[in-house]
Length: 239
Ligand SMILES: [Zn+2]
Image (cartoon, rainbow, N blue to C red; front, top):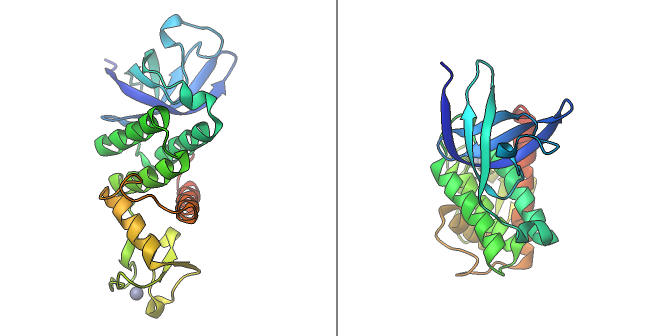
């Protein structure tokens, strides 16, 4: 018998399929990342699977099949976030967050902490007037740590030697963190102040509210995150 389950979900990707269907990539707290076929999901279709849009929290019923693809039996919105879809800067930040989540969530593996972080991120974009790129910078780093992809900003990822907190260091994002001079260094240099900032964000010890980062810090962090996504995209399949 086919297994059915109901859970909260966010759509992180939607691809049109045939005339009237869509293949969705969903993230869920308890069941990780799922691919699901939404029949009639494009033009009106069955009322029970509408509206299917990103950024709103959904409650979905999925049915497992013999293949990788679940069937989406039912979907309804349980938390609407309309501001995200009307404010361009917020929309942009939310879009990047969803792409990051798609890379970091693992297929069919529970990701409870990462789920809370992504929901928190979307709610802050929706409900606060904080700078959207600052929210994204802080929460993206937290999401990396939640999902086991924290970058090591404190020691060399090759030899393990710690780097003094008051020093600049070489950083290689695709290696997962700092690379000391003796181990060959790396092309990018991260200064001591930014190292402290990103470490605190990753651990959830500080937020943009307790310690607002500089504009240049935010730019640097978002560039790191973009490199993380490129690295993951190269190493993994497109699901
Ligand atoms: Zn080293």
